[in-house]
Image (cartoon, rainbow, N blue to C red; front, side, top):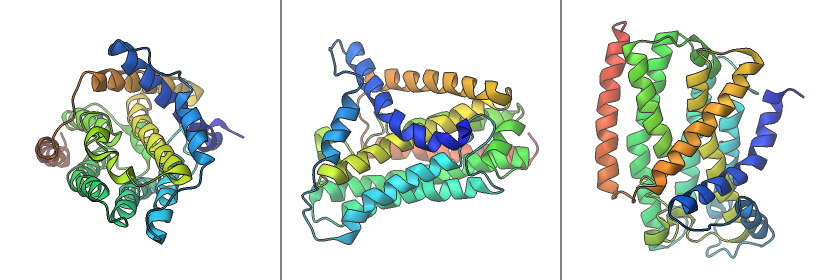
Length: 292
């Protein structure tokens, strides 16, 4: 089995360790001992062994974690590991946007199926963030598509050439990746200290573990997409995978460090920043359309 075909199997097993690394780095920065790197895996395994104590008899509540998990795995299938994606095809960027959006829809669906003020507030925040940042992602992808003439992620990444609009799109993609990866100050929907986990507040046991695992996979997918866009224009072959891993590690650690030094935004602050970024993105899209 090739590396790119095995990636959707390897990555879900790897991401809890990455979450453990993030927890350890935050602890060091905040002058705490922190948990072991394997603690996130221990937590997942503990939850997976326990049945969910469902607060409602709702099919939507029970299905939402599985849909979110499937969406996160779907995101992995369209990402290039090296130069090739496990399930790459012409137009796969459209499929990526679809499963990317479906992830948030599943989270909101599960949260709204429970009569809880915490989950309702979390769902409301998730919808608000999505309304601002999902269009921004489409705009960034549109810029890359205009500049490369490709509708595949690997095709876009390998054909990108430096220009004013491409540089602007890269900066927006860095910002968007940070937001969609759920780092502080943009973890507004979960907001554990305010909303007890927001959309996840009523989940427990196995369903909570699956939802938590899905969030970790989605975070990996967004950062890997950014790393691929940065590496593949310059490096090909098996070397590309090594550089993708190195770029991912640097981006991931940089974002974790930045997160540890920030406090959570209010929702209006996040919306204002997102609206500014979206306006800038549309302006850059026009520049890309004119050939710059």
